[in-house]
Length: 360
Ligand SMILES: [Mn+2]
Image (cartoon, rainbow, N blue to C red; front, side, top):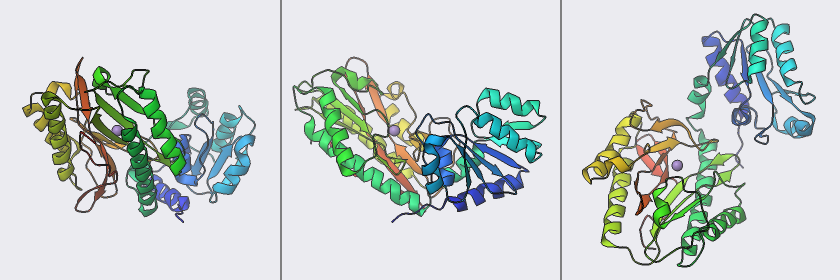
């Protein structure tokens, strides 16, 4: 049984806070609250974790979530607050602790103003938390391995469902059913099934278009396991591929493969991006590779570190990043191939393992 120890994470944050003279850290992003407490609330909840430097962390939640929060958030004092009163509680706590300087990851504007009115210096700092979150510990790696496996199950079902005459949404349904059946908590993001000319839209979602012979079909999907996400894309062909489609596919595959072999600690995000971009550029499609090569994945589907032309993020062991070059030709179609990569001490490890061939 995988067990997170949020207490160690709070200690790590406190350590950084002390070094930066931060006496009061307000955490309202629900993913961050989960990371530091083990309590995951629904996405639109208003909750707040207060980490004062010298006292026990305080989790403010509303009555609906109180019992669950109490059960999960072991290292915190949990307080149930009437809905609409969380802001007031935050301010009271800051005033009672005589806080001079507060930091937050995300904060609503009225609360921000009210804290300022109390003479408190209020600052945003997401970096301190991302410094921790971007390096996955052994437990998180195991959870993400499982999420990746569930995505492979979804992809397998999706690829099997690609047939001439089938609606895109039917393929998406097979993907999501298989992942759910396998134990996924839902989808990591809206499943993409983009066929024919629609495969030229990088985020084409899925529509009521029917698959036609010779279509590119791009499936981009992800599963969720204990809050951790996975991300995989495959492009396949319905029936037989034309020569041009094969060439385009092989170019993107080569870019994906080469970039993968460059993933290791110490390399900069833009350097990895450039490996793939150069191959696609040399193939004549540089202008049609319209996004960065990849992004970090964890509790969020898009998080640091980034692999893009401007990213100065340096890869470290324990990072989880995607490797997903793509080429999109308006009216013709597009190809994207994506794997979730675990950065090891000496290279990369593909967590998603579905074969990458064009014709399955
Ligand atoms: Mn992705």
